[in-house]
Length: 141
Ligand code: ATP
Image (cartoon, rainbow, N blue to C red):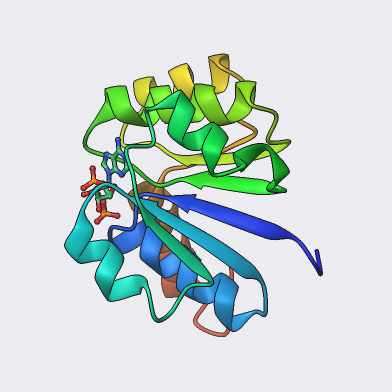
């Protein structure tokens, strides 16, 4: 959607890749990560970056997260932080919340709290690769 504003929470391999691609596609992206070094690295690439704990409701409020059209919760290892950040952005009014899950159970919890789309990066990429292996002419699946 042209003019849409995206917030990407967690700028690890997955989150930074989503964020950079959204920039390439011409969208505005706010990147949030609690790791200062990671935020420094991304600060020249993204529209806005902030060092913050995304499980802190006051921080999310002060960033005006409810004004974003879409939030991508790209925290994986820390499942508690992933769930907390997802429920907060949903409750604060972000319409479209996408979150990465590391396991089926993690995904189930995200689904129950109202996350709109759940991504299983490794599983989904494995499926794509298998399809591309059997149909090499398939450019994208
Ligand atoms: P990837 O595979 O995408 O590299 P990962 O599955 O290893 O990521 P994590 O390392 O848990 O996932 O998290 C990705 C990013 O999210 C890290 O850069 C981490 O600093 C950040 N992060 C984790 N918890 C929080 C939090 N509460 N608030 C903000 N950022 C966070």
